[in-house]
Length: 111
Image (cartoon, rainbow, N blue to C red; front, top):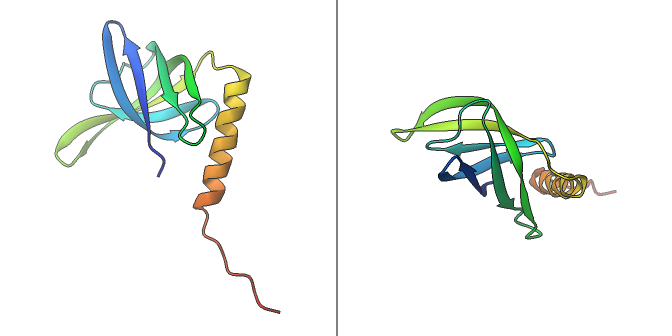
């Protein structure tokens, strides 16, 4: 499971969430008090393998409330609004490397 710490600012509130899924078009994160559906806000995070800082504006497209270990939390899906193509390409590369590293390796047959 991938987890990235993300920081965002919504009005005068700064929040920290943890992204569990990322793609070139957006990400999913959980946070105690995230912005509402339709809200736009700046977000930043660092890709763990190359230390590249990603900063862009996001819009919340959906929310899902759930209860884990007795604490309510909210899962939020956001889309990137102004992420440049170079950063999108870096995210794609990271996701592809991560996906191939997570796949179980099958032993080669002996001939």
